Length: 243
Image (cartoon, rainbow, N blue to C red; front, side, top):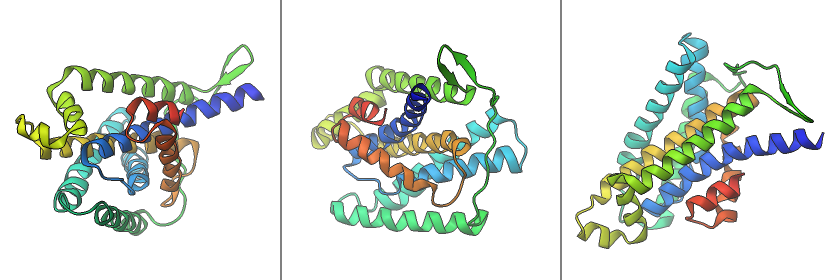
């Protein structure tokens, strides 16, 4: 019993970690607290549900399309429509705008998909794998493996790519980064794109574990707790806090 609880805790913690990392990336780059992170998670679940269950696409294609659509939402909706026009506004103004956007996103989902909860099937076998006293499903293994892989890729991204290093520089000193020739607006866009994709991926993983409904994004606020526990603005802390 205890081993099952620990496994479930780690699996759900991995989902929290993904969302928390995306949340922290956006905050570090834009100094904006994204109160619509739960709605990004929810939209990710609904998009995959649409492509996989309703349209009958293969799961890999549905997943890639979902992440691409999430990135597009991050760029067009969050960055272009909300963040960039309010770049010089106060933190409170940006928070209010994002809370309003969250309400709009939730209302739009209710109009398109309805308010009833929908079951999302998993592409993995439900038969558990027994390792000693521990039982773990293929779905849970996939969540842990993908989370570790994503965190590793993000580490390489921040350490070895120009845009990743630009994001690190901007998070430390936005004015100095701008004087060095770094496109701060480009960094903002990249942060919103990647952050929204990570939240959507969290929704994709959470959907089969729960029911998909317009209020499922409320669970993302536990990721905010992970951010606080790990140290606000710390990416490694967000991972540790989530798990």
